[in-house]
Length: 109
Image 1 (cartoon, rainbow, N blue to C red):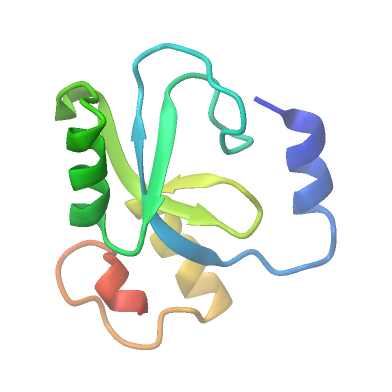
Image 2 (tube, one colour):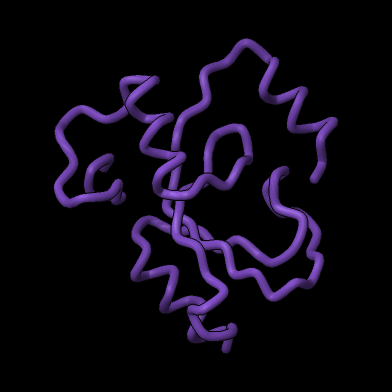
């Protein structure tokens, strides 16, 4: 985890928002330029989760057993759906009740 950069972003006085759908594929490998709170695996982003899964399939990524669905924030953090739900409630980014039982990109945009 890039604690130094994460702390700098978290303490910059700006509000953190969810900015796109994301999936974390944890293959236990280390990659450059990942969200600050991700040590292993790769995070893929997009407008909707199904599109991201299509990207992963085209890239021949591992099966979904090592995949966590979530969101990327404006402070370069990967959040699970549950963590992102707490953030969007806190910041007022969620303008309507959830469509389903968990936070989806359709709830936000």
